[in-house]
Image 1 (spheres, helix red, strand yellow):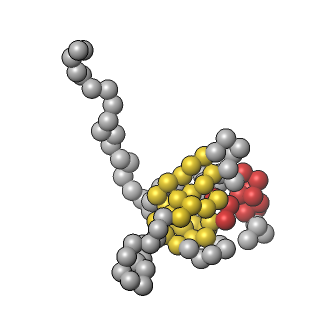
Image 2: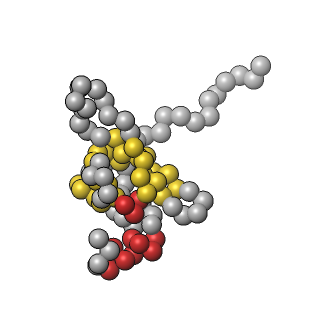
Image 3: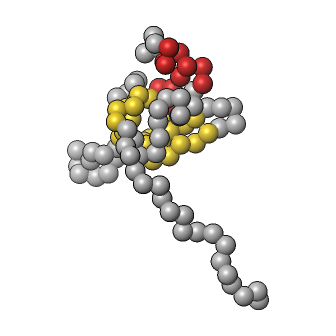
Amino acid sequence: MFGTKDNAKRKQDGSAEACGLTLGCRARDTITGFEGVVTSITRWLNGCDRIGIQPTTLDKDGGVKEHQVFDALQLELIKETKHKPVRRTGGPRNEEKR
């Protein structure tokens, strides 16, 4: 897995960006084979990025499988997804002071 120059950079950096992972792309865990869509990226103080993946398949009973979280380094990019940036709808409100 870490044989190429790109993979060597991944091993050093450990960030989601260095691994090519962005919100909305498809990724697979190299250890368990768990696969799905990247729905969250969390950067921790020590520099470790944790990636949340939502599977796109149902379990054997037809229910939704649980979201799982993995270290960025143990994931591989399956497919990049181009998506439109989400327009922020929140922010300060213009309310009268009470």
